[in-house]
Amino acid sequence: MSEPTVFIIDDDPSARRGLTRLVRTAGLKAESFRSARDFLDSENSEGPGCILLDVRMPEMTGPELQEELAKAEYCMPIVFLSAHADVPIAARAMKKGAVDFLTKPVDKKDLLGAIRLSLARDAESRTQLTEQNSVHERIKGLTTREREVMTWVITGMLNKQIAAAMEISEETVKVHRGRTTQKLGVDSVAELVRLCEKAGIAPAEPHR
Image 1 (tube, rainbow, N blue to C red):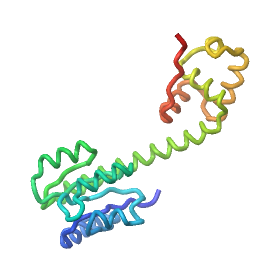
Image 2: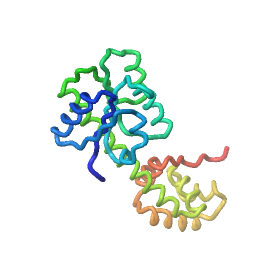
Image 3: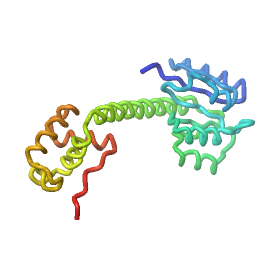
Image 4: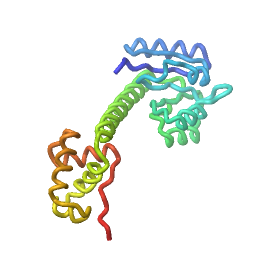
């Protein structure tokens, strides 16, 4: 994974310079933008990192950008910065997933703490996404019948019970079950259950 970047979005030139200097002094990579639109048009905003976002900006405000990013399923953590004690705005921003809402002039310790928390959350979410994608790729290698057997196996039912529920022979269940565990690289039902949970695959429901 590439080095994380702190993206600073603020229409005030002096604020951008000050924040950029602070972030870089802390040993972190920083890029600054004078508007939300400039950030959206940037080609370098797809990697790991977090966003320091001013609330009140012309054309597109910080909260409006947050909404745009949410619509695009862009999940980079956001720390809001405001020159005003905008309590209602802060409450809405936090409810929509912002990591923190800090009032200017920002305490350096508080800001760096919020940035490091944001970068940690971003790294964790990207790791989870990578794992999910890996699981989905492995599951795509299963046949339709193997996947069906898998959804029964994770219920905890025995081969004999699965065979009866699927109206196939117990030997056939054993064969598909063996191929499934081999393809997915798991050694136990517990591992298979955890893998399916990551992929969002629910257990089969017995016919009533």
